[in-house]
Image (cartoon, rainbow, N blue to C red):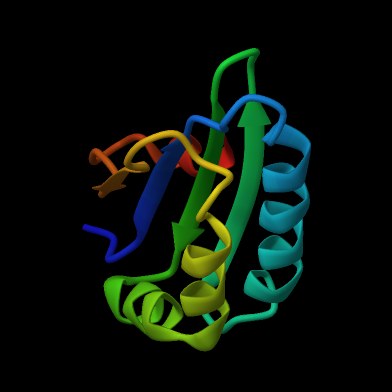
Length: 103
């Protein structure tokens, strides 16, 4: 079984703050994709939510990423841009679903 993990984070921007939030997420993406173990970082949205999907080589790489200054700064930047608590799920691949990492 793979040690890879995926992280799905769902943000609800405050009214009028979606573009600011997307700019911040794009800046985080530009730094994150350079980190060891980052396989994918994708942003998606609809009228109400912004969704971030990350794929990591393993839990250790994700843990290093999560503790880094990039994410500390990002969490601070969420203040005044996000309505409520960000929903975050950490997931592991289902055996036989190798194509799931392409999402």
